[in-house]
Amino acid sequence: MKIAKEYHKDIFCLEGDWEKDLRLKKSIKSTLDYLQDCFNIRNIHRNCAVREQFVKYLKDSMLKKYSRYSILYLAFHGDPNSILFGKDSITLNEIAEICENKLHNKIVHFGSCNSLDLERRKLKKFLQRTGALCISGYTRKIEFNPSTVLDILYFEMCQDNKDVRSIERKLKKEYSGLVRSTGFRILYI
Image 1 (cartoon, rainbow, N blue to C red):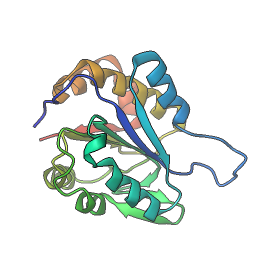
Image 2: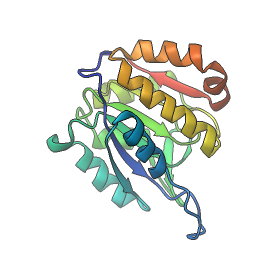
Image 3: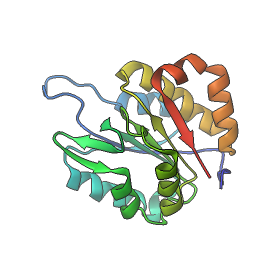
């Protein structure tokens, strides 16, 4: 299904560590605050330094009391078909197994390098297993700032549209250079 139930979509964000040096404060949290202040997009934000923490919060995100948070934003370092926790990782297939048939009406966005750099059929399998409305993210190595800017534009656009196809068309039309340079990809069935 390509049509969301609601126009307004709040964000449930799980974020990994960006830097090894703990004095550096790079985080997506200020972006989420901006989206809340400017567009009234509420958010839940949790840091996940290890895989076990990620799995726990991922399961929490599917609880009924968080159903209004229809964008699942996974902000991590990534590799093709996975997100990273230091030297550990979790694959999209493992995420789909945890979320089996529990992501109906949710947009799952991977704010990570390369995570969606895999065959279309594997992404469709993720959608079929989870029931997600769509999956989006990046197919190449991305820089923090350009991808964060595109994430902001994407999440804002999600508020104005129920039809995922419209979001995809508008993004590609209005921000084609940024979509191309980051390898942004969106898939739905």
